[in-house]
Image (cartoon, rainbow, N blue to C red; front, side):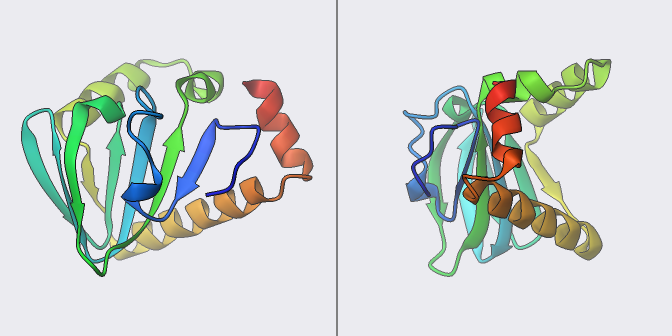
Length: 142
C-alpha cells in the first residue's frame, strides 16, 4: 500500500494492511481470489472463499477478521467523500445499502469474478501512477 496524497481509494493485499481504526466509516470491498476469510458483521459470522465478493458499507460494523494462510485477495477501501462524489442519485443507492447491511457477501460466477478481478487490478494500476491525469480527476472530485 503506497503513501499517497489522495486517500479516496486505498488498495491492500491483506486485512492487516488496513487499520479499521484509521478507516472507520469507510466502505471496504474484498474480492477473495484464493483461500478463505472469516469475519463477523452485525452479529452474523461469514466465511468467504474464492470468487466471493464482499462489500462492507462501514468497517466499524465488522470485527473478528481471520484469514487462512493461503488467502489471496484484493481489498479496496473507499472514503465516504469519494463515494458521495461519484454516486449516482437514485433509489438504488438506498436499496443497495440496505441489502449490503443484511448480507455483504456476493457469490460471483466464474465470468463475473474474472471481470471484477480485472477491473480492480486495472483501477489499482491506474491509482499507482501518481503522475497520470486520471489521478488529478479524482483529486478534484474529492
